[in-house]
Image (cartoon, rainbow, N blue to C red; front, side, top):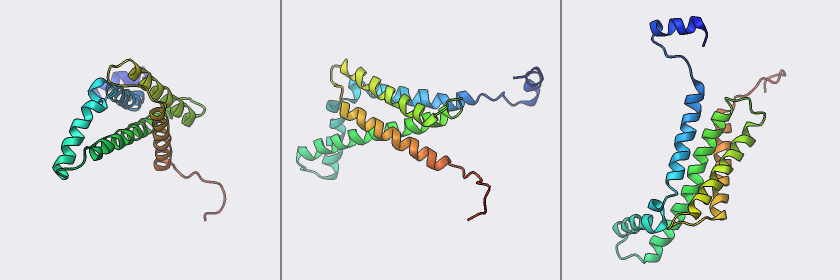
Amino acid sequence: MSEADSAAWPRSGAAPQRPWVSHWLPVVAWTALILSSSSDSFASEETSRWVTWLVSCVYPGADPVIAWALDEILRKLAHIGEFAVLGGLLLRAVRTTDAAAPVVVAFATAGAIALGDEARQWFTALRSASLLDSALDAGGSAAGIALWQRVTHVAKPTGGAER
């Protein structure tokens, strides 16, 4: 911020721009949410109670296998969903840097977080590490990155005639 900007700031009422905060804070917050869900509180033994209750409300007398299968499916979909959001947030943030290949940096960072998340689960009592879950995380982050690119893509003029 220049001296003129800092002198004008209190009078203008507008805070100085800090784009790195608005781009990286969501990444940090979402990563914290992902890592907190790796605790024993979100182990299958805990979440299956809620799914079993929900299934019993919708379909009383359902076979417990239905609740177990639904819990497993929801847990795997959660991996994909949470890392899709992370991938999009990472690409958004990395594009504010001088990274030569933002897609690669975003994907590699999401992959490192996924592996760290699974490694953390290795040390919890009710959880275990899974390469399948890491693969789902990678797929989710790739989908989120692709979606973010698609949503934010701006057509660049080619210099030729319009189609």
